[in-house]
Amino acid sequence: MSELQRDLTRISHNTKIVATLGPGSNNVQLLEDMIRVGGLNVVRFNFSHGTPEFHEENARIVREAAKRAGQEVAILADLQGPKIRVGKIAGGSIELNKDETLILDAALEGEGTREAVGLDYRDLPNDVVAGDVLWLDDGLLTLTVEAVERSKIITRVENSHVLKSNKGINKRGGGLSAGALTEKDFRDLKTAIAIGCDYLAISFVKSAEDLHIARAKVEEEMKGSTAVRPGLVSKIERVEAIENLDEIILASDGIMVARGDLGVELPAEAIPNTQRRIVEKCICAKRTRVAPFQHYRNPNDGIHDYQPCTDPR
Figure 1 (tube, rainbow, N blue to C red):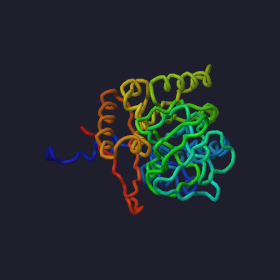
Figure 2: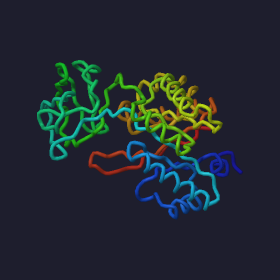
Figure 3: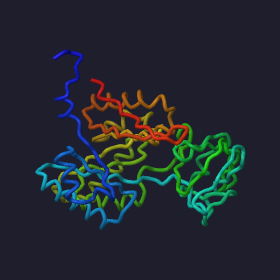
Figure 4: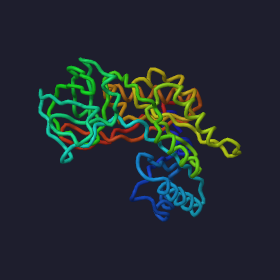
């Protein structure tokens, strides 16, 4: 075999397939086919949605499908993390035009309007100052902070856009104080352990301390149990995580490059090399690494697959 030729045997042995369980795939027969024919190795449960009973039933379905397929399949429980989003908007959306003023009001309880929109993340006014830039809806809407008045953030709209309810918020350069684990995450962690998850994905990790807290909570929940503890997977989706990458990798059992959020806080052209650097560090530290596919929109709202970087070896 030529030295330039790809070693496909090595790739097929080392690369695993992770798939998110959704409404169209949570049945035993389909999952069995995905495992037996498609090569599915890990099933991701999105804990942003669903009740404990819902996840318990899905775990039963996955285990049954794996048993029928005669394969070992892992369950990855992906915790939601802090909700850094705008609130509900009357009618579902508002049309914003360049140079208009939009107020983000942490004290607003009702539905938002063109004048003001509420926030799920109530501490945002404490995390921003005049001159900061906020990106909403995966970077499709840019707001410049002009002033902060108690619970209100007065912003200038930098580009026309239709803003819909519950869209995410990122701050240029990072610096949001929200912790990686919320009370909801602690409740969901109990459910994840109860269903026997193999991995726990921690969202919006910023430092190794987030992993220490999560691991201590797992030990607290599993005290006295001889069962294997779930591995902790850090989702890299914040600038702060890049700055603390080495300590996060060492405190984790695996790393997931969450390019959707990371691609908002970093320039798009920096993502491939950043992901490659993360993968290289994970290989050196002998840590599992997950590189999901992320769909990116073009200016005409088309969808393109942004292919993940391959193993650099």
